[in-house]
Structure formats: C-alpha cells, structure tokens
Length: 198
Image (cartoon, rainbow, N blue to C red; front, top):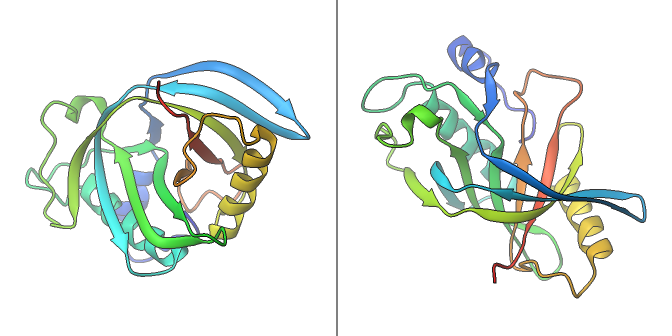
C-alpha cells in the first residue's frame, strides 16, 4: 500500500488499527523452490468494496484508491456506519509488456461478514460493491512498505520458479497489503498469481 498519510484524521487511524482477516482460506500446498517460498491457497468469494483507477502511476493510483475505501469502511456510506477493517487490501494489477505496472488498478476490500448480505451504499460514486467469485492462488510473502518495484520483484521471482507450464493468468496478478500504515515493523505483503480455473 505504500506509506499512507492519515495526519489530521484520527478516526481513520483508529479504524485501520483493528484490521482483521475475513476470507475463508484453505491451504492446499506449501513449496520452496530456488529460495522462493510460496503457497497454493483457495479463497471463498464474497462482496467487496472496489475502486477502479486508470490514470496515474501504480503507487499514486493505489494510494488514492485505498484512501477512498478506508473512508467508506470508516463510515462514509448511506448508513453512516463504521464497519471496521478487513485485510488484505487487494489490488489487481495489469503488467505492461516491459513488466512495469500500469496505473490501471482494481482495488478491493472484502466487506466484513455482518455486511455481506446488505452492504451500506457508498457515498462516493467511484466506489462500487462487487460480488467476486472464489479463487485459487499461488502466493508469496514479503515485508516492508511495499511499492510497485517490490510487488514486481516478488511477482517475477514467483513466475520464474513456477515456470511456463504453471496454470496461472499472465495478464494480471494481485498485490496485497495486510497492515495499517502506522505499523513500522513485521509488515506483511503478498503477491497472488491467479490460478486458471478448469
């Protein structure tokens, strides 16, 4: 997510300190190849709050989209209800021919379980509620404040060890951040390559 700045907005900082994982996950496999650790996981689908961007660099676009989603989750919705936070923030990235990531992103946060049936309507018209299907992913983890270069590096390492025969989508991958911006140590980021569904 990069180092998001919440100075002057203590309510937003309060909401994101209570991040929680709300996706049902099944660990299918764990592997290590050429010093790259990765897992194969299956996730359930559900309703996500989503923002599409298509105008800036990856880092700028992700920062702007995440802020919109945090405001929605923090109470900027038709019910005025703070929903708390889920993790991770998932950014579907689209690599260019040279491997760099475009500013075209689909950024999403899974809605907490209690809001899955009747999600509050966003006030910001740039946010939509989307039903996402379940998915199987190849996942690799790394630390620090992740930027485009970090996601690209770890995605390329994972793609290399999986090789050309692995059944994953080449035209997109997910960049995930799990931690609030004020957490300086022990940060968790992941790249997910989407497995092709049979």
